[in-house]
Length: 173
Image (tube, rainbow, N blue to C red; front, side):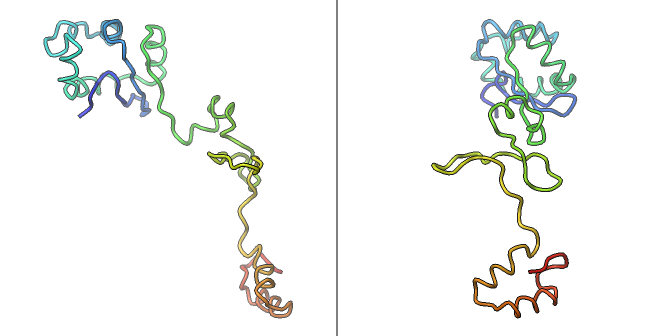
């Protein structure tokens, strides 16, 4: 069960997940109750103190789930921001290319792969290894001739394998 219904993730009407982060409960609980039109919860004996809200957190989550699911993320962002209630969108991988912070931090970088203009940066950095676009993945058979030559195959043997289609349809040594 969640330890605190007011610092929990909820799904919105547009199928996005948000993190509600009410940590200053004495100040923000009444504001939030007004925002969601549930002033009755302020005097509800299950929720009228912080300790009682913690003890009934599973029940409060069950009550908040449909409330949060009734409105889209844009509504929650606008209303909570205006009321000073901390709430944030839980990001998805597909959101990264358009995320201002991801771009500013260098998490989205140009790609060298054909048909893929951008990719995600390597999430770590090694000493003396320059960061930048990663090379495109090798195409089928792209390095086969070089590898076979290093393994001791002769030019004629490699050519014969290429003619037989050993390196794929589009590649030749």
